Each structure stands twice: as structure tokens, then as C-alpha cells.
Length: 161
Image (cartoon, rainbow, N blue to C red; front, side, top):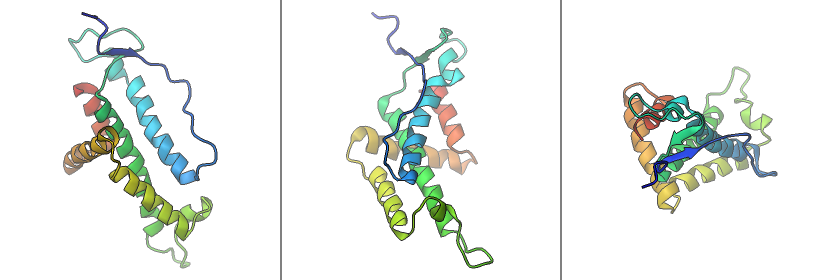
């Protein structure tokens, strides 16, 4: 039996993203990848929960791939949802809307693109990405019902997964 089974070594130096993506899509990709980095570098997972004996610096317990990809997809989806809410916010006193779409160089077509990327996450055919997202949404809704958010979900995953 491999005594290192279930353990991996993590070092995050940078996050790469394709050049040429629309800014909002790039930001949603970065949100997804940042959750991978957070999970890999989180001290709770790195140092272990009391009694687990995982004190090797840089080593973490593995998280099920469906769980990890699901919560990463959730973060990306929440980001896109937030951008949509900024766009849909009530107009300012001068009659204009939030400058988020103007500053990102996106108008109505940008809104359609965001809707499409949200839909793509929600309907991904993969059991790992799509199925994981659906499981993450259910867990997030339970945590949100008690006043928690993404941070609390990530902390729960770090301790219990």
C-alpha cells in the first residue's frame, strides 16, 4: 500500500489563460483556476485537520475531481452571474447603467455571450464538470440558506473532502 496515496504536492507559480478571449470570459476562467489554486494552497488542506497527521509542508489531501471541478465551475458561474447583475442594475440618476459593460467593451452582444457561457456551465455534458457543478450548486444553496457563501463552501470542502 502506498503511504502517499491520497496526497499530492502542490506549488502554484502562475495561472495561464488563452490570449484573445473576451475579458469577461477570461475573468471567469481565472475565477475557475483561482479556486484550484486556493484549494491547493489552503493551509487547512495542506496541514491537515487535527489528528490526521498531514503536516508535510506543500502536501495536501486529494479532493474528488468531480467535487473540485464542480466548485471551480460554480465560482466561474457566480462571477458571470455577478457581471449580469451589474448590467441589469437599475439605471443611475443620469439614466445610464453601470459602466461595467462599457469598460469591458461589451454591449448587448456581450450580454448574450455571458448568458451563453453561463448556459454552457449549467449544461456541460461531462459528469465531472457538469455533474460537479450541479452538486456544487446544491451544496452552495444549502450553505447560502444559513447565511454562508463561497468562502464557507470552500472551507467545508477543505475540511471534509
